[in-house]
Length: 501
Ligand code: 16G
Ligand code: ZN
Image 1: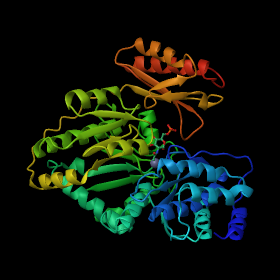
Image 2: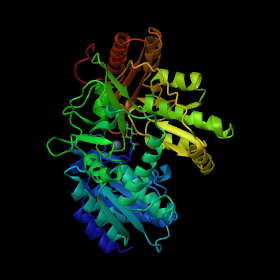
Image 3: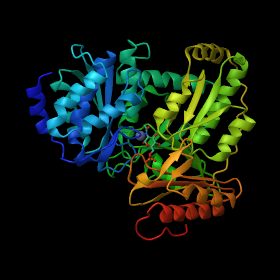
Image 4: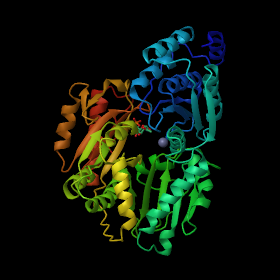
């Protein structure tokens, strides 16, 4: 390592003294102006990680669903997974080292993680459409270059696209071609195979309105359009040409407010969906003739996919183990439906894709979705081969009885002096601190039927999140408000007490 060069370049990306940040649920995330040094240092870390595992590593500059002023960075491991948890600590260490400690910290990480400094390093970079992203990704490049790493800058890409590139590269093309063209070809081919099996769609079902959250999704979908069958008529909204990223639109907005985004005019029974800012979440929705809004969120997507896969598996035989992985946010009735009606085991893990992904890998077929629309299905090699064979032979025998899941649930946020006073356990479903809070929540939940509630400190913003569900919307609102008051009183609420909904 050239310590003079490191010193010189680091001085171009100085760390504000005393500032400390944490590698959170999905990397570092905060106001963009605080991130320049973090980007440079994550460039360094990516090189070390690449040397340690002798593979290409990815770096994505994005703050996903956060407001436009924020930004963030996450590292992608060789098979397109999130950075291994053992390295999150190194990331935090490196981001928080004061200028004069930087060199020593790098050396320390090399020692602890047995990094062979003489190995080559290769890093793939991607970024979202935030105004700050381009400059920040140049800081990443500075970090990579100063340690002598090679890089390929994919520029504007969605988060899933960058994960895909990394995986293709490290599997020598087995997963696909590490180009955007390769990505579009792979996805459109899979899509066309899937729709061959769907019952004849009527004219109205050919249209799909897509809210792109004013983010990268619009750009990439336009590129992908020529690869899709022409029968599919895609209409893009919130394409980022006029409004701000994630502002009053996007998957998070639709999920939290249970209403369509701004700028998307929805007629009865029209099919609509929303991405988030980096296009790694999706939720679907429509309005019925009475004007009632229906959301097909991650819970429902997981349920529908499970119905479909369960039918396939029944034909393959019972040797393949299937499970669904959810988080505490999963609507209780979706969990009951999966377990009791569909007889699929359900596991609950902490918030964040990495936790779901990790658990889902334990099964032959692991379906995972967060209620907010992050998710996918993982197949073991054996399962993939068997299902492929079957799917090819399969004649349609559709009986898609959509899961009847209750929709009464609500998400609130509370401002508190220090969100870390809340510590949770049991996949974030129970609070261990502050004292008395969980007991209070238990007592409140008991007052209502089919009810659940939990609170957790956000991993991406300075707020406490509150979730509640119950048999009716009225009871759900009441429960959410009561839990919110309990947080306010027991966890150091700021400002005025929360008002009834
Ligand atoms: C991040 C996570 C997402 C999670 C969200 C929770 C990834 C790629 N993203 O965006 O899965 O739902 O954080 O945010 O893991 P919160 O902690 O602020 O509620
Ligand atoms: Zn996202």
